[in-house]
Image 1: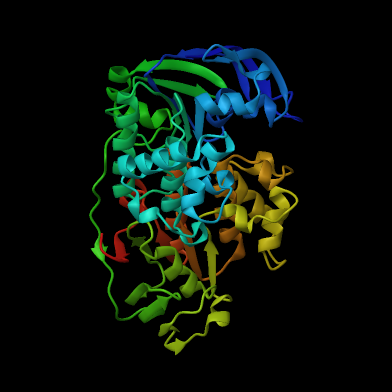
Image 2 (image 1 turned 90 degrees about the horizontal axis):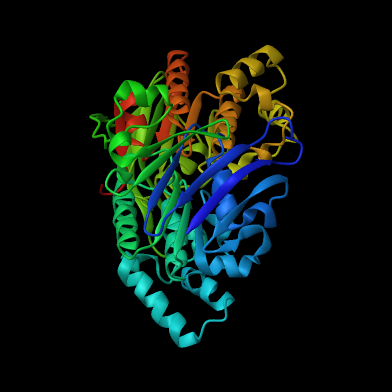
Amino acid sequence: MVEIKDVTFSYPGEETGRSLHHINFEIRPGECVLLCGKSGCGKTTITKLINGLIPHFNQGNLQGETVVDGMTVADTPMYQLSEKVGSVFQNPKSQFFNIDSDSELAFGLENNGVDPEIIRKSVKKAVTDLHIESLLHRNIFSMSGGEKQSLAFASVYAMNPNIYVLDEPTANLDREAIALLQQQLKQIKQQGKSIIIAEHRLYFLAEILDRAVFIIDGKIVREFSREEFLSLTDEERREMGLRTLYQRNPSYQIKGQGGGELEVRNLAYRDKHHAIFENISFSASAGDIIGILGKNGAGKTTLMRCVAGLLKESSGEIYYHGKPVRGKDRNSICYMIMQDVNHQLFGESVWNECELSTDGTLQDAEIEKSLEEFDLLRFRDKHPMALSGGQKQRLAIVTGIVAGKQVLIFDEPTSGLDYDQMCVVSQTLKKLAEKGHILLVVTHDMEFLELTCKQAIKVGAI
């Protein structure tokens, strides 16, 4: 079904440090293969070989060949490949072409010239099979990150490809949505579809995967059978830089109101149609790391945007050191690292990005230290948009650190991060807390929550 034959590949300007080195493996019909390894190891690059983005869109020095369903990828037009291969990217917005969900579900079929009646039936089947009725008749820009990810998967499912290529599909999903994706993957596997998935969160794949391909620096180091992979000890797994193989159920204290430098009192936000959240109250003291929990779409990010002064709340008040703080004044004390970091990376280089976040008084040595801690110093002259998804996430976290604000808000800071870097984020947040910062952390990552947060607040019913 899929054959990668002695492929070596490097992106332009990286000829001395190749992205892939002599990759050889095949994926059989109905097989689920996991691509695993640390951020930047080459997982996403391999997915691009299969769906044709390399070499049709991403140019570089390519040797060897990839064959999909008997078609040599380099010699096959993208429209032909798309009939066989469906892709779900780490950032779902990068594959949307419409502003409403119904049109997006139908777009791929329309683009392939499918009969309108078949399109209607295919879309209806996708909605029913995947249980996404709540996503119909929605503006895509009003959706949470997790809802966008579910829509992206459904739009591919409607096209009924034989091969699914998924790149970090759980990065923005809550536990319930991950469980739904797990069922969806089981369903398409039972239909005989092949699944290639590049992932850091692994526990939901325990019942689905057939093989795991472990990659280091663009080289396949080892292939595991399902049984071999799941029998790894925690020590072996950590040494490989991999996330937990089992679902976590961390304990935490629910954070209430009363005392603390930062107080949120009866905060509410409503759009034109309905309330996003209501009557949220909590307090936070210097040194607190507070998890912000809730389902996709519950309003966690909206709440944090209000706290940071990026949105104006409908009602309620926020106090800092006992005094009410208006929205625009909160910008001077709060810094928010967004879920989609592409919205806040503007520099010409990684180094310049850090410089833009400071007030000009931070010493170069301090910037170097932060970049080194997050394994980014070697990319100091690289453009931020040329980084991998996980590397961009780490850069955004570094910009928040060097900005030096008292209240630091992190929206899914471990999205797309491997185990080692998740631990680095956890340790860094703890160090920031020790220095007296207040840290508010929106997360669906229970492994990270267990390591990092002893207190949490819940937004909506979870």
